[in-house]
Image 1: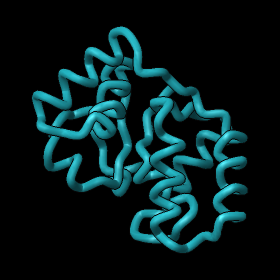
Image 2: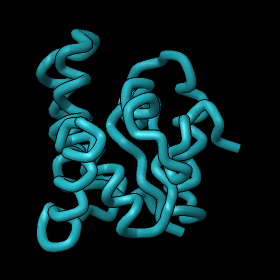
Image 3: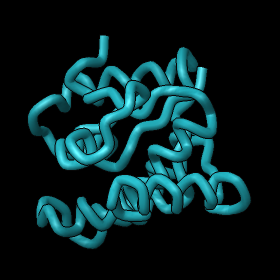
Image 4: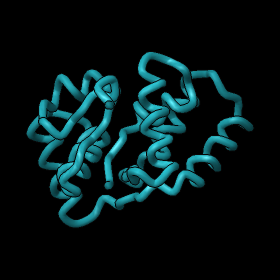
Length: 137
């Protein structure tokens, strides 16, 4: 089963904060093959950017995290065709960033769940397919 997880969830794999335990459960389900985490192609940039600005990791550690992100085997989707159209539609409709809208559009495109820890996204885009990571069962 494919699910979408946004950068706010995957960052919790590397920085211990509220709901990191839930984010790690999602990671472990992906590793075991129970689920496949799907991402827009921009996700690694966003994840590494958040980790860089956290100031928790130095340059070498960020490089290692970049390598580890590649090893997770995420299924990634480019921003083309119908996915691009849906991303733009969602961004305009909900006055959201293209970045946030790309995760929402991908979940909608795949007819699956988007897990997020981004409270701003949850408030701005209220759709049944968007599940706070805190509610992961």
